[in-house]
Length: 253
Ligand code: BJW
Ligand code: ZN
Image (cartoon, rainbow, N blue to C red):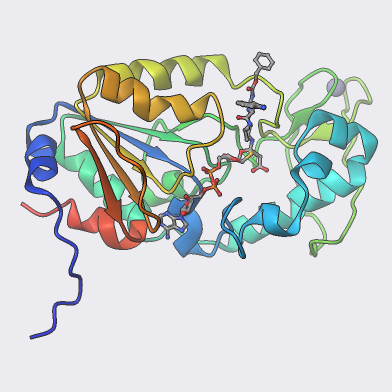
């Protein structure tokens, strides 16, 4: 008989999950890939294969061409509104029901974890749905925007308090991460028993330190990624495959 999925989850990881008091799930763009959301660094399909991050994802880029940057984020926001959570997001919610404590830390600016049912998600790189004033940080409530294409420039709205420009509520290169979320994420990583690092290339700092912090504190760390991830420690594992296929396998008894 053909087995549909040949991946065997290592018994030591399943044992560690069964015994765990606190599990951390640390996610990157790959967890949303099966929802049709582009990652950043995948060679052909990633956003940075088609767009230059220096022209779109820095404060300097926004000031140089606000309409280019705002239009690009509006295009992505509208794609995200149409996307749905996938089996990976749903498996994380089910796992949370089986362990005493589970913390979701995400680098993603989408809301697919929340829409699947995860609560108290720590968003290290902000949210595409929470724009604010570039000048005075006043939050801005988004209203309906025209249908966008990726080459559509669109002038950003103007702040009603200070007439400054409204910017996307995401963390760009060179900007500090939200301090409360980052501290909570580091504390969770240092105090968990198992950390699942799902769909991240692990190259963007300071978020990339999170799996290493968990390992240093004695936790098991499993990387879930279609690319084999380097493992340098005895408690570090690489489960090779798509998040939507692998995460449901971790729910077995
Ligand atoms: C699947 C899958 C499937 C596919 N299932 N998996 C030199 C050295 C070290 C650091 C620096 C340096 N030069 C500059 C820095 C700092 C910089 C940085 O780290 N740069 C590196 C790139 C070199 N970091 C910063 O600037 C940060 N801020 C900072 O350091 O501040 C300092 C400061 C302190 C105090 C005051 C002021 C400043 C900020 C980083 C912000 C990152 N922002 C972005 C854009 C967000 C907005 C937006 O969405 O547009 O965040 S960049 C982008 O990368 C986005 C992501 O969250 C982030 C991480 O990417 P992620 O999630 O890992 O995605 P990918 O595409 O890289 O990987 C996807 C993975 O999924 C792949 O492995 C696939 O194989 C896999 N996959 N299908 C499972 N089905
Ligand atoms: Zn303002």
